[in-house]
Image (tube, helix red, strand yellow):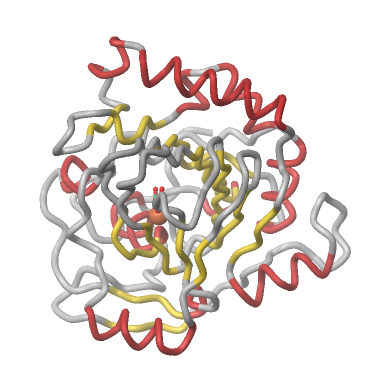
Length: 299
Ligand SMILES: O=C(O)CCC(=O)C(=O)O
Ligand SMILES: [Fe+2]
């Protein structure tokens, strides 16, 4: 299946002349209660309530070593720097992210189809799933910059054309995520409202936004109200721990000025029933290594 379906009604307007908050119109957990899989029913309920679920040990230490070696290989490969899939830090020029790691690395391809990973994604999304995006966020020590507050779905809807909130991410730690080295922060419960952001999408926005986001950002007032209402949770954990989070959870992370890298692999699963259509608020879709335009289910 490679042809994008026609654009559907826009349930979540964004990038207009003002900031608009829309209540979520989609389920959070899409599978029928009792659907078998690695998540226990109570864990799925927690995910539904909070918009995330953290797992202390998704990968063993031996497995982490394999993925960590592969991450180091990709980041150290001079050819990777020239690859458009690599995003460099504006200041230090060190590699910040590498996209589509499940396509350029057999090792990361295995991780995507691991039943502990894809099985959980299927349980949340209630269907077969494909990978909308994968990336490693390297966050080396001594000055890697953070990711400003955002909802991933805002970008995926506006710039990639995902119609519904039927997408989930997992962030797997390949180095220890301390409370000091730029760990992921999420506002629990924030996934129940969509913040439609003010301002048109600039042309070729992704070239800039992947280094530093400036379109699709909620106002200070909305972020303050959301943080007051929901609080902010910081995710820490050993290498091998993982955080599953809803596509519309408000999240971000700070800079890493410690000596200790915070390197995580992110995999974004989308339901095959929510395939990308034309972008809802951008002239053309982003390149397919950032937002997939081919919807083959993970087996
Ligand atoms: O790596 C992080 O801390 C956050 C990354 C993130 O939010 C993203 O890649 O969309
Ligand atoms: Fe994000």
